[in-house]
Length: 387
Ligand code: AMP
Ligand code: MG
Image (cartoon, rainbow, N blue to C red; front, side):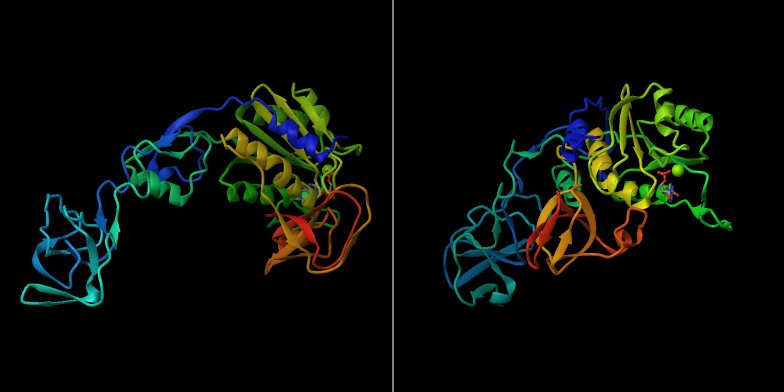
């Protein structure tokens, strides 16, 4: 059995062969950058107006209006002192512009512009390069491309970006008692839910489950199911059959498929019987069957591997410090992830914490982490992972 920290370190230290491809800008969201992006020009690349109004030259109360510049006008205009030009948001300001005056603060009479109030030098002009300078590093390798990142990359004129490929992921659920939702159930059977929650967790973080299959607790069926999926996947997730029961065949089936164990059993609650292994550049997590264990292990241990495999500069969910809304006592010495709900900047630990229950996880939006027995008064800061 190893500690949570050691397990995370083992995942973190894996050498992963990553592959790169070029994607169109509109398909780049959610990928991690496989190149550094520097600004090919000053942004904005010309001084332009932040308002609909008038570009004026010199500081005065009145100006002579000499024309207009709509957005997109590429001609070179210039002003003499005492002159103004009608200008629109985003249009290039003419040479010798002192300021832009918003149209709400002006009146026009016979081509003469009268200013309400005063003009201050530089007002309402977006200076060339005030957002980015030519050559400035915009994004480093491993940056997760967000919608705003897509916008920024586009505004730099790039329509293609190099990104890391995402892993091919497949899921195998095991267990004789499991039947798919939608089918009638007999006494002694339960509905298979882990593959659905795992699939959804993958989607939530920008990954995709290529295929999934359910296999009974039969050693040779599990062995050949693993062989088949491992062949076609970068990452294989298994659910169930990894504990110490007589029908838990997953570990041996992995051995016989040439998978090398990197760890088995983590000193944590829930999710103790967690297995991690690799075969060449392929990785396997065998997750405990209990629904809350399986999903907790995904958030804490699987996600960082998926992110690193995809080229992420930083992996794992952020941990925050948030006050607890009520007094709480935790007795066991095993570090624990408790299902919780965070609202109004406080965390409430929910009832129904058993690893067999997914209900509290479904009601909550966070895990509270205690590294050992604890008695915390209301208002004490606790470590929270938003899920
Ligand atoms: P196991 O890890 O196979 O010993 O399973 C532990 C518990 O989790 C048992 O109560 C199983 O019925 C339940 N379980 C296993 N796999 C699933 C699954 N895919 N969906 C829902 N419950 C499961
Ligand atoms: Mg089982």
